[in-house]
Image (cartoon, rainbow, N blue to C red; front, side, top):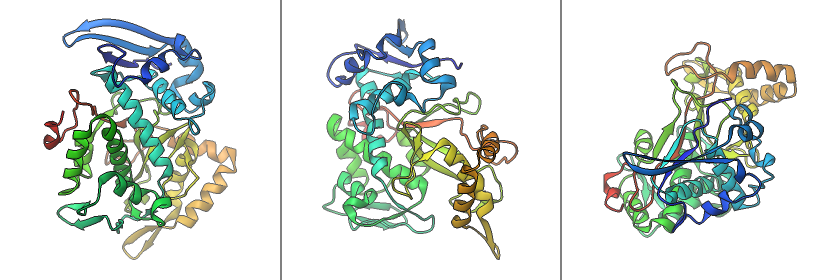
Amino acid sequence: MNAIAGVRVRGPLAGAGTEGLPAWLSDGRWAAAVEERRGIDALGAYRDLRLARDAAARWAPDGDTADLARTLALQPDAHTADLEKEIFVALLLSPVRFDFPSAGELAAAVRVRRRIVQAARRTVLAFDTEQAERPECWSWTEETGFILRPGHELIPSLERTLWPDLSGRLFSFSCYRATEYVLLLALAQELAESHPAALAALQRQWRTRAIQSGAFHDVFLREYGSLRAPLPPRYYVPGDRLWFRNPDAASAEVEGYEGSWVFYLGSGRFTNFWKPGQPYTLVSKCVELYHWRDGLRRDGGRAWMDESVVEARVAESLADPAATSRILARMMRLRDPGGVYAEGGCIDASREALRSLLPGTWDLGLPSLAATA
């Protein structure tokens, strides 16, 4: 059983912006299993909240959060409150302590994770690493990336880009860029309610230059877990952004197949932006990445992926329990360090989450937004 760190919260657990906390903490199905410890350090008073070890062993054995909603009789697909409860309990199970400067930030972190899941469920895109398409509300230059055209607002522009039920078509994305847009949409939606001045600043930013790739990570996200202190391979919190690595050196040469960026949706499912209504499980994702080696093709000096071969091999393996077990024995290992292709699997040591976003405790790393805190 992994150690449980849970969350550390400073200040009172009630007040403006913390409306969800009392409901989560008083839920009779599991509230008695929450342990609380109070203390004082150099930053002041705090409360540590975590799930008791006996409850964690029953609800998430070995840190596996896939069955959390079912075990707690939650219906996160149907009820927003149930999705937020699944998120909250998963945070209380964390082997790495989540530090929140206020109870409001804890509540906001749960809400923004819920928004990530809800936005990601609705997102359907066309996979393409060479071309990028956007609706008419965006313009592009190499210097700025895709920025908002005059007269267009950030939230509806992102929704139209990601959700084909609004736009009537699929737009081309890489998996990494797709996750940035979903994160940006969820952040903007939360700021609209809890920090409007920051939303205005964020929108001004996207009228001049898009923040993307490594800069996006540095500005908006914090990483928890590391290769030195890896998270349990089956521990995920709904709303986590994470990477599954392709451990096969040859097929990893194909652009876009170095690995796969996804969100954890809860209930044991991960995003599949390319096939509506077909989210991945941990098993199906591992099996797919394993069979990328079988889809590798070469045309002269160019490597490319034959997806039809991959799909056929995945179907064969998933229909054969022994084959699936052999694949998982390899793929469920922790990934090798960058640049190394040895005995590692596809599981990353870390996950990513948005930083604090409320007035007074804002810590997103963009200087032009800092003045709004």
